Length: 441
Image (cartoon, rainbow, N blue to C red; front, side, top):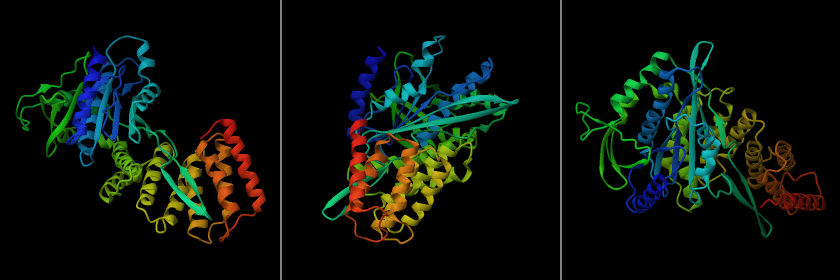
């Protein structure tokens, strides 16, 4: 029955998103049957947070209710974009050991990524509530996927009569945020806030009696937003029936969600980033307003991020900021800043081959395309070789290195490498043989 409901929802959503796109859409569903909103360019999926401590029913309940606040806060904040959906996946209240496997983040990310339409993106958020030396902490994790991408930072370099393609991805596709301490008293208030505000009212008036959001274990609650008034969002079911008004703005005031989860600013910025990448993939014009909104949220997150405990997520945020500057079209102005940004990312996540790829490609652009004298071509080769030491089978690094050898073999500009044309050609062939042996594209 649940699968049939999902199929019906999928058909209706194609109609909704295929016509006049609503402000946004959402779903609350069973984690055993994860489903995306097909047609939404970016889906943000929140898996119910879990309490990872001794048996404490109040904290178990608080962790579960946290996801509802995150969903509606995130949905309200993303309405400034377009073609977005925010989904909450809940764990059934069953003592079933198989749930740990079926609803494991890595399993869900894989199943959801398989549903992505070409070019579209997934942001998957989950987390734990845990105790350490008598204090309570919340820690979140994030995974991102984009279907059919060739690279986030990509360009072609024409040398002679041949174009050579170069591409690098984000420095990580899964990362941990720094944990944040939260008072027990605040967690205990979550049940009260949920009961008060996770309700639908007939009008945007907090004085009216509301009905709790219906959660049928056999059917996901799927809705779209067709009206917004301040912090109030009007929900309609995908079949077109009115669900009611949700006061998401008051949720933000009643419980200091972003004080304890500043990573929600990262999520908000990442949505804008992926929308820009999707536009690029479809040949649509760059949208400065989306870039400004996304950069503002990523900057807000980065200003307070922990460079040690949250290094991977800070590296992601800074990479997104840098790449958005490059997406504007004219690479001459941002290259010095990109080189500085990408070098910082290498220091944050030295074990990331893509971080080294990003820095190498920024240096390649400076050295041999822009003709700067501050970078030598040999340095770019060395950086890509270093990236291969981190991950010898990385497809992008191998492709970049082979194409760089081929390009430099015909290159007659400033800052040439130490190798001769014959040596460069031979090394390109050697890298090509490695790619063939690994069956890489």
